[in-house]
Length: 450
Image (cartoon, rainbow, N blue to C red; front, side, top):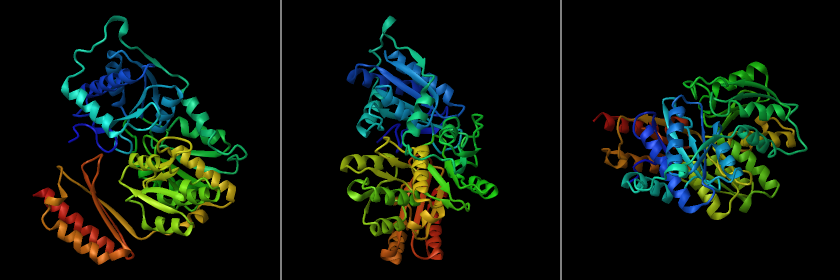
């Protein structure tokens, strides 16, 4: 059983176990111990989003790393993919991101990247947990001039901006575009506006005034309605909404209609197939992606492979089988040709390049895929619930799966990042799928009360 790590690093309420300074310092010591054992450079990058609690966790991590004789490179607020990029660009041995992504400000998290820019594999996370709880590091404290030091990398944002702009075709500009950009008061608030403005776009910004507590609050990728309203109000060409740590993107078209990650993947996959750049003509998506995406890929002459939920599973499948593009309905989009993890700004640039090339508005491009009716409902629970122990749940699931047949799907799973049970039902009839979802949610709610 994992003691600290979930589906995407360590996450929880800041200053409550496991998101405490004590654990952060121990994580820093453990990753430094592993790095020192495997590499020679002995440098670890630390970046963060805009949460108030990032300050205390940043200092604790840095102290832990330095205490094991490894140097720290501090980059300040920078998107998660930016940390992955800087880690590889600076030839560092590892990268650490302090962020709870799309969660509210009171939560925080720690995500770790290897020197190659990919998230740490499960076995290394298990090694970190073993080092922390076995006290194996206690006798290995460097002294005097052997302890590490920390320094700030002042030009990290500039390096990342240049990298992003270089992923956009050099023969195009964005001079004809008016973009509404929502940065969720998060890690992209300084970087993203510069990228699109420097490529020539007129940019109207939302969510660029972080105060440590307003990250993701009724804005960004989780709340695209605000962006969509602003697009309609101003007659803009497109809206781009990023989440708190900048690794996911949700957009809206010129009419203010929200376009989710599935449709963005369909648009980009089609273009990559035309360019013969979609390796093995295969798109990697998760079990949450709509059945309509699968149908669209077949019509394009491609195919779709599904993985478990989480961009790390998408990336693992891509690396294992030599695929080049994948993502999630929630907006994590991974262009492995350019970067090692989901990147909302980069994804926005790829989408805008397609619009520019085809000279079509997003509303027309989005017609490449038709979604099956789908409903996703969340049940917040007071404790961890084993779905198999809920009275009548397995029987209800079997009954409803038989009712839907081959024209629908049911997926029920616990969130890996918060105390929530997610119920997704897909089919051809809105009334039917809502009825099924409500009944399954009701069974979970009753079990939580009891």
